Amino acid sequence: MNTNLDIENFILDFSNSCQKKQKKVFGKNEVVTTYIKNRNQLCILIDGHADLVRYDLNGNRTIVEHFSKNALFGEVFYTITTNNELLVEAKSNCTVLFFIYDDIFQKCRNNCKFHQTLAESLPQLILNKVTDLNMRIELLTKRSTRDKLLGYFSLLSTRTLSTSFELPFSLTDLADYLSVDRSAMMRELKLLKEDGFIEKVGNRIILLYK
Amino acid sequence: MNTNLDIENFILDFSNSCQKKQKKVFGKNEVVTTYIKNRNQLCILIDGHADLVRYDLNGNRTIVEHFSKNALFGEVFYTITTNNELLVEAKSNCTVLFFIYDDIFQKCRNNCKFHQTLAESLPQLILNKVTDLNMRIELLTKRSTRDKLLGYFSLLSTRTLSTSFELPFSLTDLADYLSVDRSAMMRELKLLKEDGFIEKVGNRIILLYK
DNA sequence: TATTTTCCGTTGCAAAAGCAACACATTATG
DNA sequence: CATAATGTGTTGCTTTTGCAACGGAAAATA
Image 1 (cartoon, rainbow over the protein chains, first blue to last red):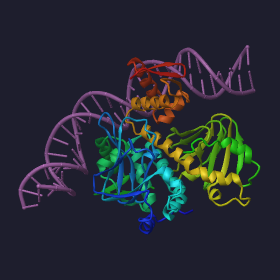
Image 2 (image 1 turned 30 degrees about the vertical axis):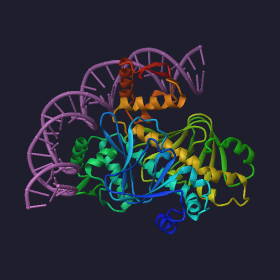
Image 3 (image 1 turned 90 degrees about the vertical axis):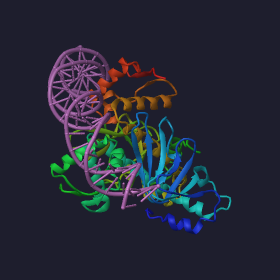
Image 4 (image 1 turned 180 degrees about the vertical axis):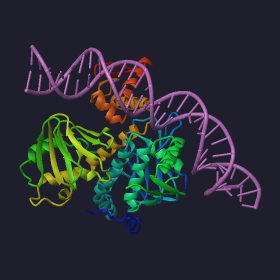
């Protein structure tokens, strides 16, 4: 399976060969896009980190997804049923490619190699996204804050092949990602330490169980 | 966009032309597949309804996804990090096609039209799945049982283009789908009725707000 | 470097959700 | 049809979570 498509080289090679896309750069905390009026927009994060964030009517903030290099996002993945604000915020300097989804499978007027290869790679890229979303659902369906934390730590442990890893979020953001109250999460984190499940040194978590 | 691919006709036309897939029929409550040792399995539900169900160590049951006609599922969408049981249960009589994902983009040795068309349609089918999963995440990140219920009802209302609709779940299953305790959900349903948000007649919900 | 802003860690109290148990209704099944 | 199995509706009690508020640490910024 070709999971290692290097989009970046791709971009370097072909960035001038096709007119039907846009490449933009964003600074930290800038809004990359919103999911309101950009029908069929598809974006690829070439570099940096960004979050898809929702603010609900009670003022709760939720980090719906966390994107890193090669992540796909954009309004094409959403059927807007919500009246909540959905926006993608750059968490660091970001480089993003914008497409219209319809364009991808129509041959570019230049018949450009960029679009051709992209169209071939897209199923695998979207498939990766589906597995990410499924992992996210598994986390969110855990019944308690404790299980969400342990589940998330276990995930990071699997990814890093280590029982010790840095959190990619601030604790405030982690709470918004797990969809729980921050202070309640802090309390649970303390209990996990007291119960000998984890150690925490700065932003680093060390798993002690199993 | 070709969202209306009629897979069923597809099947009728080509079900004998290709050896690299399997078609099976399941009765209610039968296990269609598990997500443990079927690497790269991709399934399409041709007919019927089925649920992807997880049982955790505390005995909680979660309906991770609910599948109806033309839904995609299978182990290819999961990177197994969990030690929970994940299985697909038929909720009615089901007809299911099984593929190996690798096969789809390799030309079938017969160079069969079935596989060719499937490969062309797959991006759109997977895209549909992504939008489903995103809606699911939006539901699950709601902070209260009340908001989950209202969010789900609003979704059904949008789908049916009506403020009155049948629940596609039993209430027990709905609780497992929203990942909340059943009795707590029943209590909240009662409060929603008392507060004039909904009416409930048998399995039918009528939205009264807005 | 001084100062503002964000983040961390904690707590008391209130609200929400989970658990357990039960009676009754409805639906399968022998 | 009788009986078993499953689903609905309810409630008292316990546990978990959320909310609000605060002081101090750390980081960003002027």
